[in-house]
Amino acid sequence: MSHKTVTQTTPTSVSERVASLDWAKLAAELDDQGSAVIGPILTPEQCDALAASYDTGGSFRSRVVMARHGFGRGEYQYFAYPLPPLIADLRNALYPPLVEIANRWNQAMGLEVRYPVSHAAFLDRCHEAGQTKPTPLMLRYGPGDYNCLHQDLYGEHVFPLQVAFLLSKPGDDFQGGEFVLTEQRPRMQSRAEVVPLGQGQGVIFPVHHRPVQGTRGCYRVTMRHGVSRLRAGSRHTVGLIFHDAT
Image (tube, rainbow, N blue to C red; front, side, top):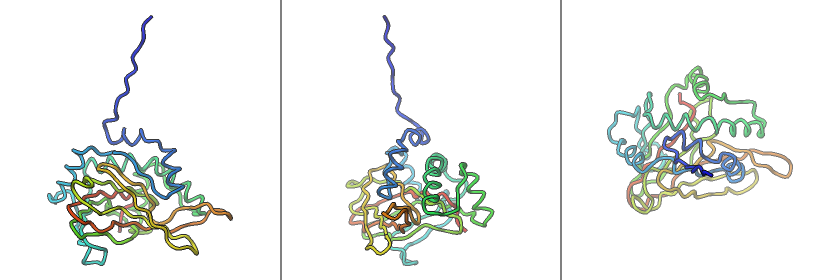
């Protein structure tokens, strides 16, 4: 009698890592808490290579110094089209499972907007409305830097979920600089949540608002996100936004 040995392989590509996630569990976490941590999706080598590309300038369309606009301290750069392959792969792999959650949330909140299954089709919708500038970005923080609470809206067409990936190693590369979410429910004080991340991990969170089930049905709560003050070192993150900007 022979026995076959079953071997399990570790997902190697970004799309395989994303596809292997427990999306039913992640959707439940998003419904319950308003955020969900995934990964690590990026390897240390991928994180280091992305962070090192910040100063090359070839992959970006514009640079923003946050203090000049009252956004906080630190800076970020928007990627240009065509996106670097790794950034494009992340965007393309994450949109399909997220669009199911996005459409379900809009239905729960009584919003008529529905998002197409294909990310390319959604970008066509953005571009037809004049939103043609890519929004994925990389942020860099140094000692004393922080990001004020905000929302990444950019135009009429807004995909309601986004993902931020930490490229640096907490404790080794930097201290402080925690990712922060706030939630404002009607007639209640704001609730804050600190989301710890490791290198290569991502956090999925709402761009603008999310549904919450109450005693009298589902209602809409407003969400904002930011980064607390960096106490030491250097912190790089990638932000994946699925709608384009005007």
